[in-house]
Image 1 (cartoon, rainbow, N blue to C red):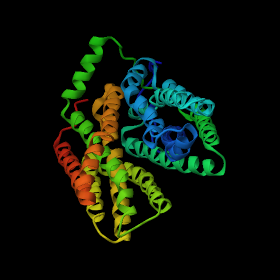
Image 2 (cartoon, helix red, strand yellow):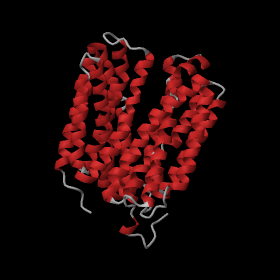
Image 3 (spheres, one colour):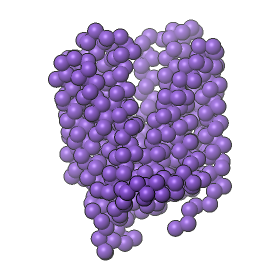
Image 4 (cartoon, rainbow, N blue to C red):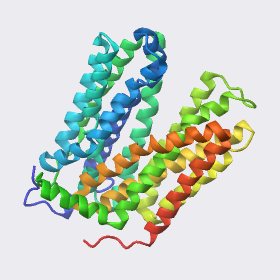
Length: 405
């Protein structure tokens, strides 16, 4: 797994080469499958409520069991990739995730379903914990922005498509068939990834000894750029999840009075995230991360302010702008982590993603409290504070010198 003696700058994946195209295709497929499997069960919650005679809150554990297990395993998986290699862990991650999706229809009770989802989350963690580090090591620096953008575009498309496909199949058949279809998609993705991802040329094993791990952790947290990027991830995801969690409550109420189906269609705006990730990645390669991150955060803020309008078209425009800015900012920040962390990329990426997924819960809860006393303006106030926090961090990052090589 160590790099060959002949490994050199010429071994980096350059944009436009066949190896680069295979690599970006593999990472896009991997991200698509990972997030389709992770979030696919979300539209099945009403069916699971009836099937297992559980409350809606309990049924939602079928989603959170997977996401919580993934979040807890991000750092351990990153350490395993430091020792045993990135590509191998990503391959096993996709294969195991697909296998557990195929096993889910065999669950005899709700407890078994949750256990299988938690085990699936363990395997799912392997790819996001490793992908950013692999891209940072193997892709040429001037092409990393667009490569990261394509990977995150795959994530966004997978999260949207998994929900849509599972809902469509379940309406046509049942929840068991929906999991089987998702599992078959995951297995196909694992096969394509296995055949497409190039061999690692720049991987260096790192020690798993506690002293070495603590030293790496200390270096990461002392770096002023990495600590700010981890905090930015927390605030970014908190604002994003908060907006989509409570947008439905607003659109169901007057003056909009939208149906459940119409509100669900708002999730199709995730397509903006796919476009934003790829576009902002190319923009980063041209003008630099320090010039893109604050701009994407400004787009988020503009979108959030627009959602305060009372006209439905303006609200949808605001959500689209917010989604575009969020995915552009996330693409920029996550790529920046790899650039600053260098040989500690895997651990730094795992810490970034841990902050990211913690943000999905803590600021989201605060937004719920804000809804109870201030309705949508209260939610917008909390989310606006998150966006302003990220903007301040982005402006500080803009002034930081790059780490010494």
